[in-house]
Length: 209
Image (cartoon, rainbow, N blue to C red; front, side):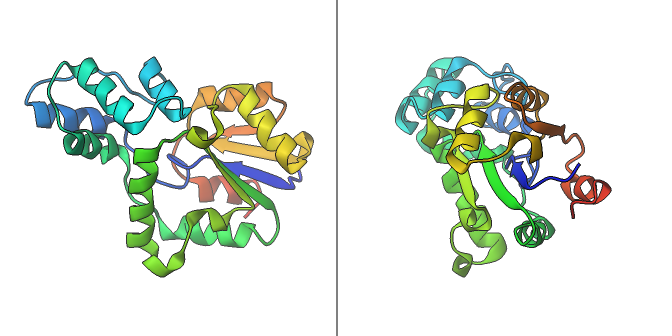
């Protein structure tokens, strides 16, 4: 298949993630086990609303306190919430730069204001403060909390397709969550479930990179 456009997920594809870190950090802060309330496959409505931009960061933190039933501080919440964000491999940045010469490339991420602030710090620490906005690596970059929509809803894919006049038949979506891949397929896109964090290996195996 000869693709003309590629839509990348961020966490678990370009940025390394470990969801368990957040629950482990909350447990460490509270000094007691914490019931899983946020995983790759399932989240409560609090996280859905936050990543759609329907509630503020302050309302999100209040929801976390209610969920945990603990008087935890804003700083502790942010520390635990951001614990899932790991490193940004430079070779993936070089990959994006190279692909941009041949393909139309886009970013579509389920994310939120707290995570993006922390992610921007990771970008600065990894690539230097003079690198600029991470979004410059893409023709367009879309964050769920700015769009009022969220993967896996087919509507968010339809929005990206319509705004950029993409041909679904020649557009590939790559994500580490199977439910997001299924949502993209429902919207009519080609989609690949990345299970091993090796996006470079996958693209090379397909003759894309």
